Image 1 (cartoon, rainbow, N blue to C red):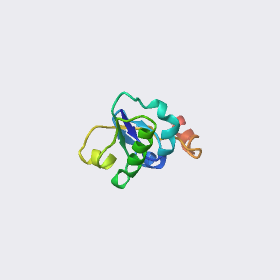
Image 2 (image 1 turned 90 degrees about the vertical axis):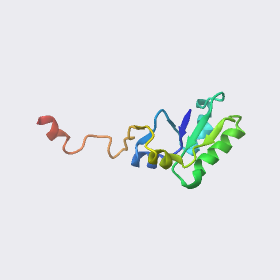
Image 3 (image 1 turned 180 degrees about the horizontal axis):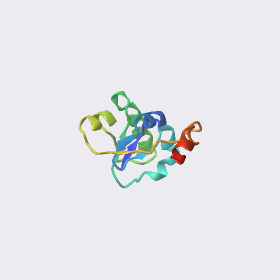
Image 4 (image 1 turned 90 degrees about the horizontal axis):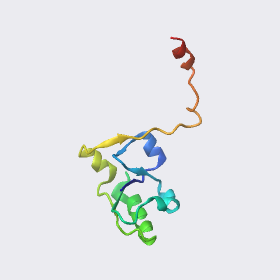
Length: 110
């Protein structure tokens, strides 16, 4: 299993992620740990220097009994630099962009 630990802002700025990765913020890891299998290897990645967020999440998960966790060396940036497979994460709508824009009516008429 692959776990993407980048912040929502980072994910919105760069909506690509490692193929098949599940996204959680560091704050969500404790609450959503039931979604993480205990019987499989879990690879954690972030985009912070020295994999700080991944290391913190790994420590938290190990303390919770999920022992097969490892941060991805170099994180998301190293994965991209090697041109490994990525998929596009849908960008989350914000309250400002959730409705049709001012040109939506013009587009529908054309």
